[in-house]
Picture (spheres, rainbow, N blue to C red):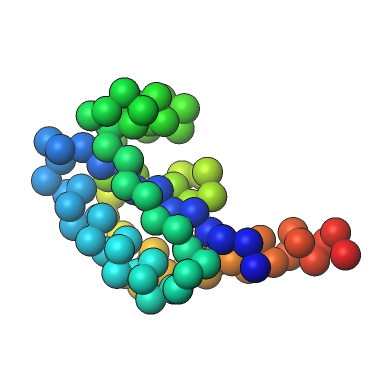
Length: 98
């Protein structure tokens, strides 16, 4: 099974970023080893470049496998559902090749 990558783009000035990151940490921990979480601070040059690539205008923003999935603070249920949907999408893509 291919991993699902979850990126939480945060800003040190955003009061909502810590909550979004905490929810993402909790959800990805429950989903297991096939979910890889990465926090990206837009205050760094790397984070600024990634934010520009995604065309992000607000934080927190959550990307799953390189696509914007949610802007703001999702509930654990919503984020878990988005990750599950991505697992299913990846499974369909792999099965199409075999």
